[in-house]
Length: 464
Image (cartoon, rainbow, N blue to C red; front, side):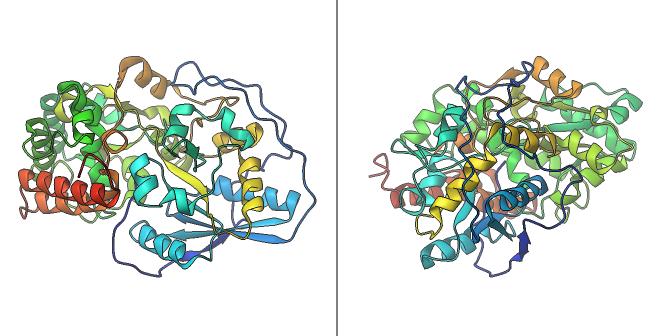
């Protein structure tokens, strides 16, 4: 999942959420004994590795460590776990949550000031680690931490620069990172609809739903980041249609502008908007209302995480998670599972006065039973990219894994350098496309211009 921002700086902070604030009814684990449970065989699993053993509990100390994160990146279950950490160690974890539209400007101001935070979260991915966070200067090398051996190496690579690991990705890179089409099974059955296998099939489904007074797709454009997903999340299909494309883009031997498949993808996305399949209120719709919209029965589909059914059932107990099914984003006739190992990632600020305490918190959080507790008590997590944990996939999710082939390439924002830092800009250009102020070729040219600027700022040798 990507929620990047390049908006103008603002100091708006959605109050500091202290670890002792409202939390789920379940209690945090009382001990830190390693779990022997293995990941479910029905879903992608982390590479085999030895689980780290928890270290001995240190004496209590009265310290507060400040954490800065974008909206939705800190789960209530993590706040509850932080409360347990404070009980055991005396170290208080103070969460400062920033609206996603302002997060990176606020964060950069904090990092440049040299004070005020101890840990911060950022989107993993090599270009982001280098350009957005300057991790080699602003983050602490975590390569020797005890939990590293149990972290999926594919996930670890997304937070690694020059052989050093700077991020701890405690994020479900499957259920919370596989952005797919979520559909209401009852509405599909009511109107005798089949799960589409091509873009044309998808539009026929949308047309039938609209004719019957059902809004085909809930698409929340107002957040600025969500509608962008329709394009880069089918990056593996673009690579499948043109093998070697990602390598050529990264070597500055190919461009977005003039690429027929990319232009077709944008044209198809715009077509969905122009035909009203995103609904008349798409430009003002909010991502936070997704579960409510899908639970209402007035929307048939949404582009969301593979955990959306679980999220809906958690918020609306009268509904079952398995009342919702999943299929790949059908742009360019895509039928591949996305592979997206980069998500919100914990980093310790290199100028922190509490590096030892920050490391202690990360070690505590990544003890196997604490990871398992996070999985079991976070509705949008079904697993985590560590060995020694057990996934909780339901029948609908398992059916998705057994129906669609895993992609051989990563999603575009992970595979192609200098795309992810432009996420919010791409969102603005897509709105311009929807409203007739920009064409698809002009939008692709803008992405190329942005990549060139970012590549030169990063001294990428492919852009002399």
